[in-house]
Length: 318
Ligand code: TXA
Ligand code: MG
Image 1 (tube, rainbow, N blue to C red):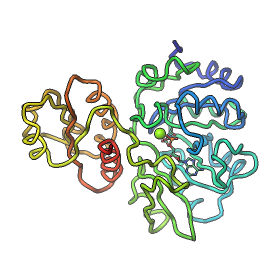
Image 2 (cartoon, rainbow, N blue to C red; image 1 turned 120 degrees about the horizontal axis):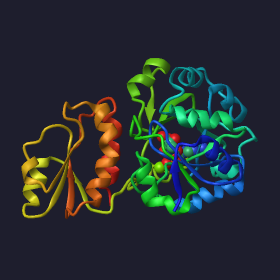
Image 3 (spheres, rainbow, N blue to C red; image 1 turned 90 degrees about the vertical axis):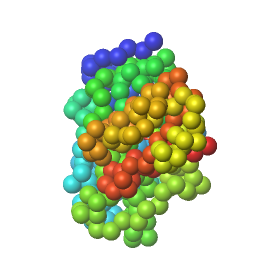
Image 4 (cartoon, protein in one colour; image 1 turned 60 degrees about the horizontal axis):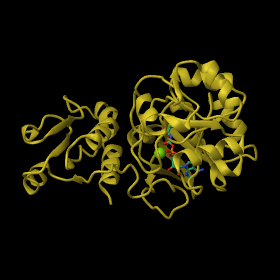
């Protein structure tokens, strides 16, 4: 069983020797290894059972360090990095030869971000290499927002879990890049489109195409819980499944709360940021409960609501 703690010196020593450490970030927990050590990176794919065609995000402590690994060929990319790093934004950038091909699955671009978490920033500052880190969940399952989620699912395969408390954003980073001169969003996430557009102008969504090598992790049924999750109008779904034991995931207050065996309220005051924060742990707990199935209703399609609904749709896909 792996150890859980807050010792960044220990984490740094393990990583320097090619080990695996789970790291806290503001979005979700990552499963990290030295991005420049191909053998160490291989261990990430093994631990997660992740296919090699799915590239990894490289985490650096500052914008300055990002320049060692990638170019910023467009003003908008520079502005986004300057405005939102550290933060929940990953930029796809032309990679420099310093980045091993296994990290990018042979693609010419590398995903880079500066995570906004004090413990992980201090870890990154201790290291003389960046950290490749996917979300610390078995491939295809819900991302972990607490150290305990990581320990339960991957604990035996990881050398150390750096416990930085619960995530403060709760959704993975938004992924952006430039293609044919257009600012494209490849994954909706913890930074809203509105915030991105304010800094860098109009964006185009290029989500959801599982055959598109630009976003191989965006499979239709990524984030899938094991139980069936039905997404739609609560009233209709509850009526159609009367008599069954239901775990209900609701945005705010719900008239159907007393008809469900378990109720997960994402945000009492219907605040989308708070809902984002509670989404993955609610999905997990609903999945682990004794309910027969999970019912959820989409949240308002604005701000972080787009990313929340995206995850709910994927969780409901079979
Ligand atoms: O918030 C996050 O981004 C978290 C934390 C740990 O940083 N990480 C995360 O990593 O969500 P992961 O591997 O679970 O999702 C990364 C997504 C995948 O869909 C992957 O295909 C895409 O980013 N990606 C990474 N590098 C890429 C590249 N070079 N080209 C295209 N897509 C890339
Ligand atoms: Mg992931």
